[in-house]
Amino acid sequence: MLNLPDFLKPLQFVTQPYPRAAVAAVLTRREEAIPALLQVLKQVPFEWAKGEWNPDWMIHEFALYLLSEFGEQRAFPLILEIARLPALDDLLGDGVTESLPKALAATFSGELSVFYPLIEDQVADEFARGAALCAIGVLFKQERVTPLDFESCLMEVHGIIELEPTHVWDMWVSLVVDFRCTFLLDKVRALYERGFADSGFQLLADVEAQLRKGEGTGDVSYTYRAFTNVHDDMSSWYCFSDEYASRSDECDGNEDDDDGCRTGADAIEDHLWFVSLPSSHMRPPYVRESRKVSRNDPCPCGSGKKYKKCCS
Image (cartoon, rainbow, N blue to C red):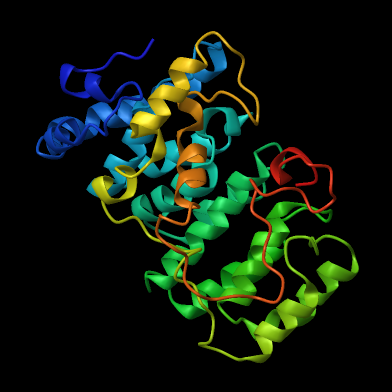
């Protein structure tokens, strides 16, 4: 069981509304909070392996974001270990693609090669492996790595990803395209020719069209969003709303499925559903000829299932 100090206990479970005062209290106790939050991340793999993880726990998400706000570099290897856990989607929901890149980038220090064990781990969730690549994009966008180191990283990563279809190749292609690394176009074409890159994610014709626009023309404002602060990043999550609480009450005792009831483990997934509504903030107005397929979109194969549950 998680052993939390009293000042972290209000963050253990999903609550409504967003616990702003409790989060603010933790932020004022930085020196005391950091060791406790690191301990939370250390405990996650053990609790997960024992099968004793409570799906309504939220403390691990708060730990990711609070340690990101603190810029705590000791959190990086712990986050990397969590990212390699089996069935990660059940633990983080869409935090796999939303929380992980931000947290990895915010706590990173050293050489980009520290991401490689996750990127090449074929047992790990392929979206977590892609999140490591996304974090590298965040770092490059922030100018925390040099263009030379970024390009060298892309070349090195190209040599460690398995030679078979995987979402990791799709994310690698995205980095090449979004940051206009035109010198890698031939390698991208080869990936499509061999069927390793998914045309359902983005078409080769679109890739070529974007790369022809040249350096400095990519729109990286949405995909490679850096961490801002805990309040801004978490307070609007749907799981903290009264509507989410009502849905949870209605679902008490029922099994969760893709179209039914949700638990705390699905907090970010529900948040993404909420922010996709017209009343929520909009993505930048960049439009490609055929858009990339998100892990929660209907699968392009027409099965009616979500992409992450079908052909991803």
